[in-house]
Amino acid sequence: MSSLVIVDSECANLNSIYKAARMVSLEAVISDNPKTISSARAIIFPGVGSFAHAASLISKKKLRESLLETVARGRPFLGICLGMHLLFSGSEEADLSRVNDPTEGLGAIQGEVKRFPEGLPIPHVGWNRVDPVNAHPLFAGLQKGNYFYFTHSYYARPEHKENILSLTDYGFSFPSAVINGNLYGVQFHPEKSGSAGLRLLSNFGKIIADQQ
Amino acid sequence: MLAKRIIPCLDVRDGRVVKGTRFINLKDAGDPVEMAEFYNRQGADEIVFLDITASFEKRKAIVETVEKTANVVFIPLTVGGGIDSVEFMKVLLQSGADKVSLNTAVLNNPALIQAGAERFGSQCIIVAIDAKRIGQPSPAVDSKWEVYSHGGRTPTGRDVIEWAVEAEQLGAGEILLTSMDADGTLDGYDTDLLSSVADAVGIPVIASGGAGTLEHLYEALTSGRAHAVLAASILHYGTFSIAEIKEYLVKKGLPVRPVEN
Image (cartoon, rainbow over all chains, first blue to last red; front, side, top):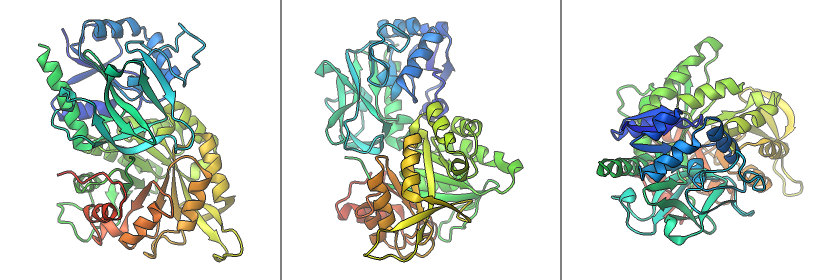
């Protein structure tokens, strides 16, 4: 089994995630090789940009099966921002009528990705509080209401309450972290959230270590 | 609730911080990486580097600066100054910048906003606007401001509010709004300008120019309806620390991210 793999989704924040992971002694490789991803010990799945573009990229690079394989094997898997959205099957951001085409997400968590309602400044950008719904190792050592850095116009809404790991308030309460087994998704950017973000990445490292 | 952001702005030329800082005992107050680390420790919510390097040949200095900063500072990093192509945006973003701030180049070529937003997402694209008031403030007539380019040297004939709306439509994720009238005066932000733009667009406005007191920052964030304040002189000259600013804003009831220790 190889190492922690940061999936090369060609997004701009790839190196920032790599650097932040390295800061907390998480050595990772950046790769878009399906074999490397299939055999990864754990996955970080970053993403910024648009849902349709990212989903079609996964399809083009033939990463869909590899990613789903790591999920099925219960390998620790962390989707960040758009990477979190891609854990769901579709998004209002992409054309939902085109089911089963390359704009489909992984469908690893049931639910939908919706645009923030009108009336609030969009994107939701800046530091906001994250309240874990229950104590969880991913948030170990972090206070309730710790601030994390967000920048997004869409948010994920799991169909089942038990998939919600944390909530954040932006006019209304929306899920800022989701969970399904060893699969995690965070809407905020831990790599840009100062010491709180580094702590979360370090916690993810502990989750990986505990799998051994 | 979304926190109001305090953003130090560092002017960088040929890889060195230009406006000296009088107060900090840093080994090298001219080193942008060290300055960024210092403000990060102080509780800054983001860092802006404004590259004022004159010659094109020396532009790679800012890329190195960004790369080194991103190795040690894990808060959002914005780079502005002379960015005139999607290629250069890409280089900066891959080096560790999270956002680019576009000004003169997009006044000449507004399509560059769209190209950047489509390629990297709107969250990466800040449009910086240097605004100068037309005429004297008067209760009788609505205020108007003109956009200036080339670091505030060249009037463009464009209306600030119209340009802000156009920038948003083209895909800008935030507006960085500098009042040229207020800049450097320490007499307070032009809150009239700020609120006029904030009311016209749906994206966040970052206030810049004129901060001299804590009250000024509060006004920009309340009556000016800004989401964030950019600050240079009052931080660099040690008038206030970021902790003092945040403590004051909290007392006044505004949400801010606490300074971590």
